[in-house]
Image 1: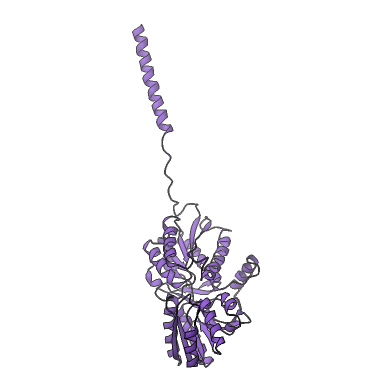
Image 2 (image 1 turned 90 degrees about the horizontal axis):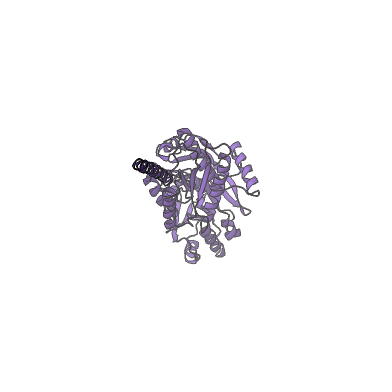
Length: 397
C-alpha cells in the first residue's frame, strides 16, 4: 500500500513538473520581432525632405518646405491609399557631405517612400546617385542644370529646365531689348553656375549677341572689385550672372559704385528676397527666369496662392514653394495610379505624367523623364519685388 502511494506521488510529481515546464516555456517565449510596414499597410507614407534650412541657400529649402507642408495638409484630408502622409525633415545646410549622410539616413533608417529635394543641382546629383542605387524615387523641386535625370530611372525633377529657359531669356534680351554685348560672370565652385554659363553662352551666340568679357568668381566671395573694374572697361550692354542671389546682389552693388549702368540677367538662382535685401536699389531692373509667378494665375494656381497667403501671414509663394507643392502632389498621384507606395512600382506611373495641371504650370515628363514646363516666366525686380515682365510659351512636342 505504501509502495503504491509512493508510486502515485511520483507520477503526480512528474505530471506537475511537466505542466510547470510547459507553463514556463509559454511565459518566457520572446515577443515577435516587429516587421517593417508593407506597401499596403496603414502605416504613414513617409516622404523625405532634402534641402537647406540653414546656410547660404536656406531660402530655397525653407520655401520648398512651405509648399510641401501645404501639400501634406491637403493630402491628409482624405489620405493616400487610405494612409496619412508624413514628412521627414532634415537640414543639409547646402553642404554635399551632409546631403550624402541625410540621403542614406532617409532611405535606410527612416524607410521613406520617396525623397523631395534638393532644390540645387550639385546636391541633387550626389543624392540622386545614392537614391537611384537604392531604388528610391528622388524628385528635385529646384535643380535645373544638366546631368541630373541621366543618373537613372529613379531620379526626377519638376522644374523649368535651363536648356529651355536660358535661350528664351537671351532671345528676349538680345532681339527685343537690343542688348547684344554681354559680360558673362560664372561662379567656378558652383555646379549650377558652371553649367548655366555654358547654356547662356551658346544662347548668346545663337541669338546674334557677343560675350565681350567673361569673368569668374567663387560662391561666398564678397569682394568683386577686380572683376567689376575689368567689366567696366569692356562697356557691356548687360551683365549675365549664372549664380545665386547673394553673390548677384553684391556684384551689382559694386557695379553701381563704379558707375556701370547695365542691368543683371540670370537664372532662377537669383530668385530670393535676399537679392533685394542685400542689393537694394542696385538690383532694380534685374531680370531672371522662373517656372512660376503669382501674377496672371490659372484657376488652380490662384487657389494655391490664396491658401498659401492664408497659411503664411499673407505672404506670396515663390517658385520653390510652388514646385515643392507640385512635387509631392505628383508623387501622391503616381502612388495612387500604381496602387502602391513602393518606389519600384510607382516610379513608372510617375514617368508617364502628361500635361499635369500643377500650380507651377503644366508639367509633362518626356521619355527621358525630363520635364517640359510651360510657360517661361521672365521676372523683373521692380520697386524691391519680383514682378512679371513677360510670359513665353513653350511648345511641347
